[in-house]
Image 1 (cartoon, rainbow, N blue to C red):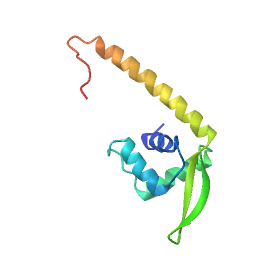
Image 2 (cartoon, helix red, strand yellow):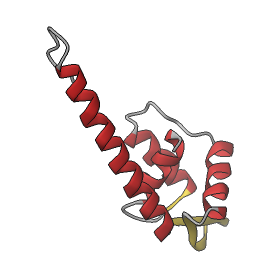
Image 3 (tube, rainbow, N blue to C red):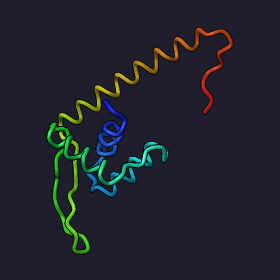
Image 4 (tube, one colour):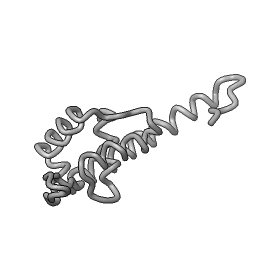
Length: 109
């Protein structure tokens, strides 16, 4: 799974959000490392909708402008859980192998 997809699914895991809120949440989750541009965001959301992982929960008008609020669909929950488990297993194995290196003292935060 590509990182932007993982970040979008993670941003929707706890509650539905509209596009601008998703952009902010992805930046926060990634500690500012990933900043989605508008075209990238909406292209990814359209793809995730086609794949059934994300759905439009509602459409609303705010300050005269229409906006969609997106929510994580069940296939998205499943995909996020599976990717989380895969990444966790990979991290455990990487840490195990690093610990075998002479002189390795662990990652610094």
